Each structure stands twice: as C-alpha cells, then as structure tokens.
Image (cartoon, rainbow, N blue to C red; front, side, top):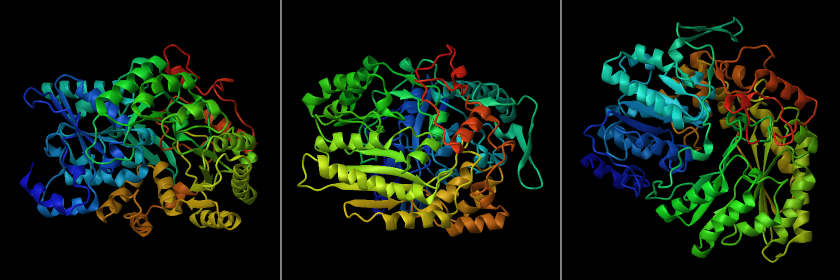
Length: 611
C-alpha cells in the first residue's frame, strides 16, 4: 500500500472502501498480461459492490486468458480531498495501481445523476476527460449499462458505448482491443473496426445537426458507421456466466447478501418503465440451475441471506418450486430468503409462508398510481382489490407493516388521482384493523412518492415532466389529504428528478453542461449531501442551454430523438401506439396472455421468448 494512503486512511470515513483485499477478489500475475481493465463504478463502494451486473462482468473479464479486470469506485468527498492534497491518483483495489496504467477504463452506467462522477474519476486518474484529448489507443474509455440507451450526454467523453448485455459483447471488444494493441493499430482504425461489432456505438462516427428551434434535424454518419446500433442480448440465458464465487466485502454494503438472477425482461409492459423495455425479450433460468447457483454462492461466501433479482420476481413461473429448492438448503442453516419485486396481483399465502420460514422480511408493493383509471393509463395492471387482498393475506400472516410506492406527475394525472393515493392507503389501514393476526404491535404503512421522469425508449418518451412547482403542489395536496397517524408519507425532492429528466433525454449539447457542473464541484450528484440545484442552473445559463427544453416539453410524433441511433429491439411504432392507448385509458395484455408485437422477439435467434 502507498505510504501516503496509509497516512490518510485514518482521516476518512469508512476506510475499508479503499483498501481492497476482500475474500474472493481476483489477483493475477502481471507478467504475461495482454490487457488490463479498470472496471469503474461511478458511485461509492457500497453501491457498486451491490451491483449484480458488475459482479457478473468482473468474472467474465477475469475468465479471459491474459486479461486482468480490477475494481475502481468513486471516492467520497473526504477521500477525494485527501487524494488531491497528497497528489494520489485514483487506483484499482486489487493491485493498488493507478487507473492511468490500465489499457481499458470501463464504466458501468445505471443512473444519470452519476454522470459527473465519470468525469471526476477520469480526472482523478490523470486521464483527459474529453475523448478528443485522448488521441492514443490507450487508455480506451468505454461505457455500458442501462443508461447507455441514450449515450449522447456523455458522447464527448467516452470513446465507445456497449449497448445491451455485456457477457459476450465485452469479450469481443476486449479481444479486438488486444489485437489492435499488439498489431500497433491507431485509435481511429480500432474504432472503425469496433463499430462493426453488433452493440457497439462509437460517438466519433456520428455528428448531430439541429433545427433553428433546437430540435434534432439529422445525424450525419461517417463512412463505416452503421445506421442503427442494435443492443446485444444473451441468447442462452440458462447457461450464461454467473459468479458463484463473488467477492465478500470487508465492510457493509447496500445489498450484503447473495443474489441470484431469475430472468431478464418483463412480461408486463408498464408504459413508464425503461427497464421493462430495455431488457426485453424475456428469458428465464431453470429452477435446477438457480438452486445450484444459489447454494454454491452461499457456500462460497458465508452470507446469511439470499435474494432473487428480476423486474418482477413473482412472475417467475416456478417460484414456489424455487423457494422450496432453496429452503431445503437455507432453512437448516438459518439462511433467510428474500423476495423483492413482488406484485400485488399474484402475492399468495403459499409464497408468504415460504418466505417467512427463516426470517420475516419487509413487504413492499408498487401500485404506482392511486386510481384504477391512472393505473390503466400507465398499464400497471393491478386492481385495488388485488392490493387489498395481498395486504389481507400478509396481515393475517403476521405482517404489521407495508410500504407502498407511487409516482406523481404521470401523464394524464389529475388531482382526483392524487387524492386516491390517500384513499388507498386508508383502505390498507382498514384492512389491517379488520384482519391483522397481531394488533398489539400496531401497524406502520409507509407511502412514498417520486416525481415521474420520462425515459427514452418508452411510450412516455414524448411526454413532458411536470414542473418542480407543480410537483410540490401535488405533494402538498397528498400530504394534506393523508391524516391517519399510522400512515407515514415520504416524498422525493423534485430538483433531482428535474435534472435527471434533462440528462435522460439530453442530446450531445448537454455534455458541456456536465463538464461545467463538474468543474464547479458537482460530484456525487445522486447524494443529497452534494446535490445543489443552483449549480446546475448556473451551468445551464453559462452554456446557453435551456433545461426546460429537455424536461418539460412535449415532443411531437415525428420529432427525431437524440437516442434513435440506438435500437433496443422495440419498434418506434409500438411505443407510439402504447402512448395512444395510455391517453385512451386502455390497457395492453401482458406477454403471456397475448403478444403485442413490440418487435423485441426478433432479437432472439429462435424467434420465441419466455413471455
């Protein structure tokens, strides 16, 4: 360990974030390496180490002969100050080497508010933040993750984006880089060749052009650039890589447990949900495979909890059999089983009894909207009676608390829809009073609301976000309506959601705003301790960019979107049709009842998804 680092660690919070040396980390001999990858997560250690995608790709990279992938996380503010004062560059945890010494610097992007951390981490490593200032092949700055479905805001800083699932795509790009490095290619030759790989977006090959009103008029393509970059998916999800020997953190992280991935995609088609469209088509793993992966992971880590990852866990067809298979191993060893992402319309006493065999976990439902009219408009096909029945089952089974998540500002929302949230919470409370098995401990019903953020590649990508003032008015209306002492109301601030809306639907002109915010101290912007709206407003003003143009403006049907060079497999016509269905209050069936012809199934070579 660097002696300077030894001196400063006692002066910072949670020093274990920065030391490495964890159980199951991968360390390789540097001799004979053909490529070194700094796998960067632009947030704290606790957040990054909880990310399942990062765990999977860490193993994928390190299974490549001659490749060593190491982890890098964004330092907290106290650590960054010490690093800059001592002139300590950003380093990788496994070796302690500076990130600038690596061949590939790869960022995992899952949240727009972490974008300025990308610039900060490059700067801390001593790497120029703008791709135009990095003419050499090495270091190559790449990015992947769910936020890359609109890569434009970061396109001035990243050399290439990996669109879609990375288990195979990342390997192909790394192999191409090794060939380019060993054969002495220049950077431009490599980028042109990389652009031929399905799922690779090279921003240098695309030049946006704008109308006088600021909307996008066209995208000029360089020779060799594909017209559309289609996301990559894993065809054989059953046998795709999964780490059963994951790193065990030396300090507490957000999800301090084993996680298994049941399936990718979602059958539901909620019109606000970017993930539901981005991860299509649906592909599942078998019970036998999941039980094997889960029990091996528990044996190799010593964790006392296992959780199931998916967009809607209770939609897994064989969930009871999976619970039984895992509990055969978990119950004798007092290992608890956690089921997040349950739906109110298929929660059952049978599943509940399985979950609480070892330890009773929290119960959370996300109706998203208070009225049936608005739930139909967003295609959240959950009825009030479904939610109340699920709560009855839970309360009779001994639960004395439930969390309910909603959004405010959804398209077509009215004040009546907002008041309906309070009415629904009161009905949940009444259900507890009537059916609770144990009333002596009381009940705690928590209602949480966030501000709706329109996302690319969804039916609501054309819609405006409500203003911050209007969101605050709606929060006050709901707060004043919700009077029962047993109901606790939490709400997300509108300022962060406003900036998120700008970044999520931003174009390449947003890049200079990001850089201005970062140069004025705007890092860790997903954390309330660091976020300041005025810093963003000042940057917009200085750069001559109107944030309301991106966040609060409704788009026309034919407007060219900044992200349309990227295809997630879902047809634009399908998204617009779903928007029309929303405005008419008409629901669309889930994938298991009827295929809606979204187009994503064409990404599968067999032409049939698990939906």
